[in-house]
Image 1 (tube, rainbow, N blue to C red):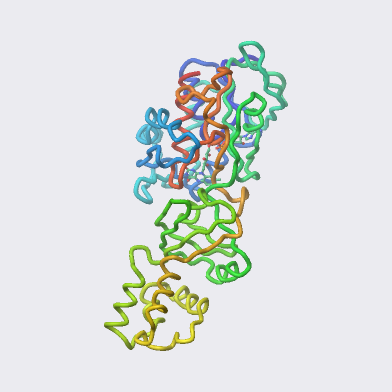
Image 2 (cartoon, rainbow, N blue to C red):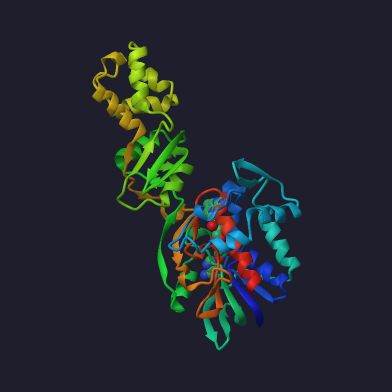
Length: 394
Ligand code: FDA
């Protein structure tokens, strides 16, 4: 079998790329070892797929080379994908500012991509193992479970390592190494934290409770909800900060973002001296959390009126509330991570065509590359943008 383009991976980037190459008149085959296309799309956004973010800028991405993503993101913008889903009659909602989700189901996005591939004459073959990929002069040869396939161009869109049960493999990284490319160390991103025994028990007791917080680590700060879980901490703020957190380091949680707890407590001590700390906490936090705080920090004078609190005690409480220092034991790992940090070093890749500079027959797109978005639809926007740029250049 001979194709102009073989795309490895029927995920977000692969299907988008295949459709574009098909529309450009190429004979295109998409191969995937999974039994379904777009499995991650289907499970994304709680089953509703946060398919883009209207506020996408290169600043929302992590990469050793922050300039690499600029060209593709500029050429294929969120409005272009919105125009595509509009054309296919997909209804969507803006759940948070800029974050667009399907109104009904993520299946709608897979339907759009599948239909586009069909219209573009793309062949999609699932349940196929790829054994080897080698260069044969100016072309590429794939040995697969369905036989040998020759292709002018091979596009690697095999994604990252998160959720191995959904078909994630290190295939793309191994292939990159085989062709002499550098692969930057990978680690789970957008992933919940696991806590140690002491904090794990406390978190488990509050499981299901969500609080608005600001979390900081490694020079980044996110103001979004935090969720207590049986294993530790999750919710948008924790997922976001997990992408910059390094094992062994601490995160700082401000449970009263926008309020200077020291100033507020001093004022309360002045204006309502008979009030107890529990009342003050109860005005700011859900009851379960206010009670938990009093249990976590059993100071001797908890039952005393605020008037009896010294400046040091006020400052200590303010520190606990505005600058809670917490050292996570780890993360939940690949099992629940939404994305892979690191990946194929972009230094050897063209940011326009996504071809490997020394091997133009080989291309890498999507999450397999060292480009990872923050939470909020940016990762799919990267998959679409890199897929379109590569597909049009095939
Ligand atoms: P993707 O992982 O989509 O596709 C890779 C394909 O390659 C898969 O079909 C896989 O089976 C195939 N493959 C892998 N190894 C292979 C091999 N050896 N041989 C053949 N085929 C192989 N992002 C976002 O923007 N908004 C959101 O709402 C979410 N939500 C979300 C939830 C959860 C639970 C997860 C895990 C992830 C998200 N994401 C997200 C991230 C988003 O899903 C991710 O960034 C994109 O799917 C990446 O697209 P790719 O096409 O690069 O890889």
